[in-house]
Image 1 (cartoon, rainbow, N blue to C red):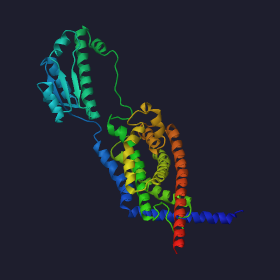
Image 2: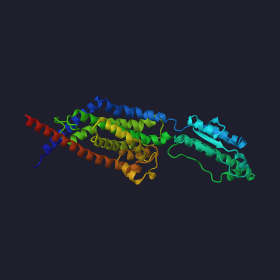
Image 3: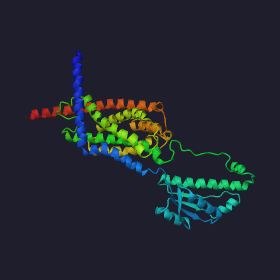
Image 4: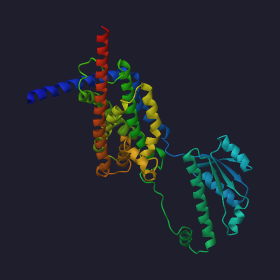
Length: 414
């Protein structure tokens, strides 16, 4: 049977009309549903601001530390003064012994202990190695880093001064070379402030975009199941919901219009508000965000087909949020992630979206440098689009089957 061009055009026009109708119905549903509106609008607007404000200081300063000085010598007092003068550590308490210092740590009055033994100065002047023991509260990585690195820097500086004094050199240049024959400069790459916010929050913003989208789509799907007497996503009795492609495209267009605005807010406005590194052009960000949002939309629509109740999607998304952040390779080195988990990470758009966004906006990479991630995002969008069509088609078949069984039952009863 041959189809004329006019009949093909009519089918396309009818499919476009159905898609626009479904888009309008889905947009009304988003506005009317408080839960969906919360995750589509309120959470993407407010949550990144709260998260960024928390880490706005970038680094921790004046971490309280307790000192146990059993040496009571000139060198031990010099060590304490230099630690207290550093920007990261503040000598808050002096304890008589380690037990008293540990009690201060247990009451969270201090975050670490510097223990200077009684033989500290004697060992140094005997040309033996002096030691300072550092005890840190490991519950917070940033406080541990500040306490340990401050003690390390002070001991290295004091060791250099003692080496210059004992070297017997005639000029200041000879003393400097003797104390530090190989000079170095510590330059934090891609994070001028060496802070947590500039290095990790850009990836978190991309993850928030995906997770809020999946949450909103899942809640919308749960609402559709609640309103449908057959507990399916496809309404029964509405002639506009007859073609799977129109249903998927209408819903996806609604989500795309909303999250193009939310994506602009998260990828461009929030970093600018909190002075995060912004090295990418708006053209590069737009090219990246379009496939990322589309892939996330179809991923969320596919996941929503497995959601039977509205609450289930919240449990699922909250459970996987932290593992997904680690799998991006930003907060944990990608090279140290086992190959099995790297394979699992390829299933999620956030993995490649976060990596590409960080390289573009934080590391200053060209768009050609993120072409592998860009292509994978388009491949994910296509794959999840096909899977969504298949799953919605299955839902459509179930709805029709249940309707026919209901009709048959009513006829037999009549």
